[in-house]
Each structure stands twice: as structure tokens, then as C-alpha cells.
Length: 292
Length: 177
Image (cartoon, rainbow over all chains, first blue to last red; front, side, top):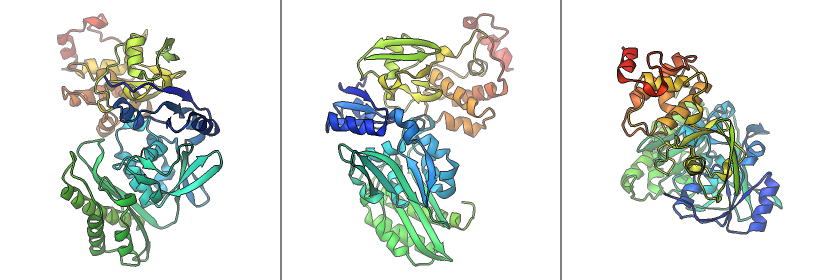
């Protein structure tokens, strides 16, 4: 029987209330949203917060997917299931639906939240690669206001983010530009598992020339969950199979996967390359309105 | 702390530590052992209950987090009119062998049919993809859910069975044939 160590429980009724509790309870307090990352770690005693601040009552305040200006904005308390069922999200970024479809299982997705996934900062987390590929910004809120953290600067290391002790993730903002296409490709051992490796791509074309591209990688030790060398090699180049394959090779070369129970490092490196190539191919087809 | 839930339409309350998981609260403090406790790692789905109308894995929810919310467990599926169509489907189509995964499977499939009254086989398999049947009886679980979708109003005891506890193998077979 797995039971967390003892802790104090508080329930926040607003963002301001949650921030006030974080300030008064100190650095050993943690927010809990869906709890599907934090509670398993607490059950294994890998995490032992002194206080939990339950923010599920903020689901109305922070649970939304909407357009504001030229950005897609996702509230931090949006459940995975709600992002997956959001037509708006799928209309602008197919990568969001591709990824959500393979995150855990439907019952877990009913509970887990987008903000919680980012805050957990698991090195195999799917949305971290997605938000890296989409070049999103994370809104981090404290009692002194909001600050915007680029998704590529959010993760300082495994289970460590730029979100400070008295701060909370409140929103994800993804820039919207017309004419793009996106895709997420994942290989897992069984349905609902963490990935062996996964790659996401967002691409914009000017005719046949790549005018902008973002590539996200997860589970393969890619710095900031992205493949900058592959992106740089593609910029201004024609969208061809040869260039997608070359970008895949660069992505594979510059990541640093570990051998673990999900597979040997060289297999994961192979996947990083192949999945990058596939994600680019599908993203380009989608940007051209082709079914993919 | 005092935790009060509405469980199967009835308000229930107990004084527990904040670290008590919902699955143990339901089983050990409320005495409702229909909800099963399996892997403890949110993988197997034996502990699935409905919280505010949505299935969740109760080994990964604190009882404290469920305070004030509405829970439905397998014990709440049967009504004065008889079994829920999902329950009847599992009887008609031999949807259970050892029965350990069954309560969670039924709670999730009830939710599926509430949101999609005519699911495809793919929809059904996707909906229960987070739940494990170690007897590997998935085909009959899928058939049971399909049966319920085809018989949405047949929430009664099998005609040939008489009492709900007295269902016999041959009567189930005769319905199938």
C-alpha cells in the first residue's frame, strides 16, 4: 500500500488565495491540480511537501482554451481531455491534438492538467516538446504580477522549472500565424505509456521555402526539449524529403538519450531522427491542406 | 479533517488524515468495497469511480480533494427498476471472468455511453484503454458495452434469472444463443 507522508491540506478558492497560501506556507508547500504526477511521487515518498494547496476550485477561473489577439491561450487548469476536445486548439495547432491523444489514457486525461504537466517538468513529458515546437510562452504569476517565460527557458532540468516557490503557472500562450502546419509523432511501448521518444514539428512555408520552423523533442535528453540545429538547417531551405531527412539526422546527432527500461540510447537516437523527419513531413502536408 | 461526499446520492462523511486516498476512503471508511484497489499507480483502472460525472482513478485522488463533490461507485448503478443496461450487458455477454476490473470498466463505459450513445468498437476500446483486464477478456467487455448501447432502456433483471443473485450459466447462454 502506497501512502504519502503526512502533510497539511489547504484548498484555494482563487489565484490570489493560492499565491497568498504559497507565501504564508513557505517553500515546502506545493500546488496540486490534477495530482496525477505529484501524488504518485508523494506515494513513492520521492516528493514530501509539508503542505498541499489544492487548486481544483480554480478550474473555472483557469480552465479555458481561447483566442486573444494573435495568440491561442490555454488556462493552466485546462484538463487534458478538454484540450483534446477543443476544436479551436485543433484548428490552429494539430500538434496539440496529436499529442493529447497519446498522453496517458482517457480517465487520466479527465483529471491531469496542462499547467500541472509543465510544472512537473518530467524529462519525458509530451507537452514540453509541444510547447517548445510551438515556441509558446508560459505565464508565471506571483503576487507582484505576471511574467512571461519562453517555453524553451521554462525547464531548468528534470523536475525543475523557472517557476519560483511563491509563483504559479496560470496560462500558456501560443502565437498564431496563418499558413502553418504541425504534427506530433510518438513511439511508446504500450498504449498510454510515456514515450520511448517523440518529436513535434511546426512549420510555415513561403511557396516551397521554409520560412519558419519549430522542432520539439522529448525523452531523448534534448536541451530545452528542442532541436535548434535542425531548425537552423531548415530555415530558408526548400521543403523536401532530403531536407527533412537531414534535419532528422541533425536532431538525432544533437540529443543525448539515456539507456533505460524503455530502450537503449542508440535506438532512442534513431527514433529522434526518424520521428523528426516524419513530424516535418506531416506538418508540411498539413500546411498545404493535404490530409495527413 | 472532516470529508463529506455525496456517494450514490447519499451524503457520507468521515474524519480522516489529508493523505488518505479516495479509494481507501470509499472502501475502508465508507465500507463500499465494490470499488477495487489494484495497482496503486493509476495504471490499471480497477479503482475508477465517477467524480462529478466524470470517471477518475480514485487511487490518485485524495479524499480531501473530493470533499463536497459527488461520487458514483458501482454500488450506485443499480436502481429500483433493476440493473443498469451496462450491468445487464456484462451479464448477457460474459463481460467478466474474475470480476476484479469490472466495477471500473462499468463506471467508465457508463460515462462513454452518456457522451456517445452509439460508440464504434474503436471508441469503446479507446475509452477503456486506461483499464486492465488481467483475464484478458477484452472482447467480451467490448461486446457487453455494445450490448448496452443497443439496449439503452433494458435496465431490468434478466427475465429468465428471477433474482439478481441467482443468474445461472445456462440462462445466460440461452440468451446469447
